[in-house]
Length: 94
Image 1 (tube, rainbow, N blue to C red):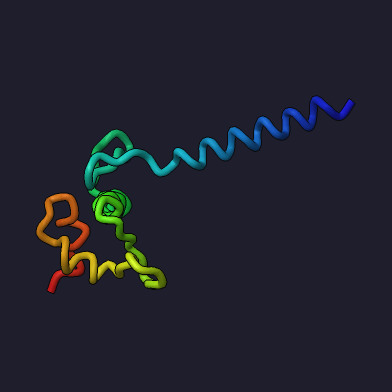
Image 2 (cartoon, rainbow, N blue to C red; image 1 turned 180 degrees about the vertical axis):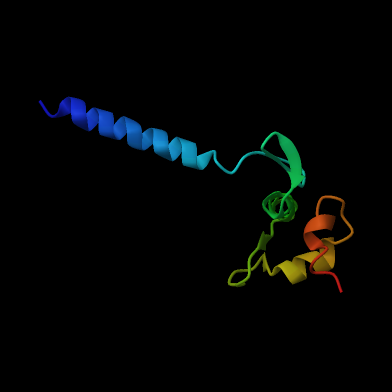
């Protein structure tokens, strides 16, 4: 008796989570598709920098707790000349 309303509620809830998870969009380097145009976004710049950090077994964070954690300033001190991180590190360069 209650199976149909419960199943419908769960389906709509799952659909809402799937839509929210894909709402950020995809990145191609520093650029994100926004309303049909590629726009440089801070989100994609950070994602590119985090990919470089993971490749070096590092983690970018504002609160360093573990070994391998680096603040954005520390990360950019060592990676500012790399093409993948240049735009992310532009605001941290002296």
